[in-house]
Length: 114
Length: 111
Image (tube, rainbow over all chains, first blue to last red; front, side):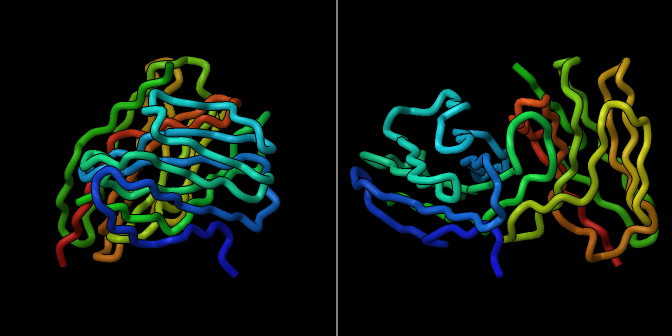
């Protein structure tokens, strides 16, 4: 039973398109994140939501818009895709704010912009 | 904000040897230091973590040490095996839950 699941696993799209990646966790966690892993394997935080509220918004182009319909879901919508957006995007979750514990990652979405 | 540096970027060892990966962090308020292992094409997974009130923690062949004064922490893997080959990430965090990762170390264990 997958704890953090992302869809799709692979996404190939043309420049200029708009695409979404979905994430769901069944752990009952309060906090969810999006991380971007580039070709050099650097893991950079993009956004964090706690109970549907945005708490971290790193320096990310405003073409990226996260949406959390409820605390179990955090989706990422990307407008006007660019070649540099190609990366693996990981969703993650932790139990909540006010203490740090293990982050559980989804399997990743490999986005390729051509 | 927090900044985490990790060295080396690549590490090759012979099976049975030890491997050490080192990280430094910038924010003295950080109090949680996990290590993640990412196998090729897979998700990062926690292998060990340490909190700021502890100087060392061990779990079988894996150990982590923390020097709060110097803002250093290290991962030690003893008796390495080929299945230890992966990318390892250190991270640092304060109680705000914002995990900042190091740049990763690609460990290769040769049989």
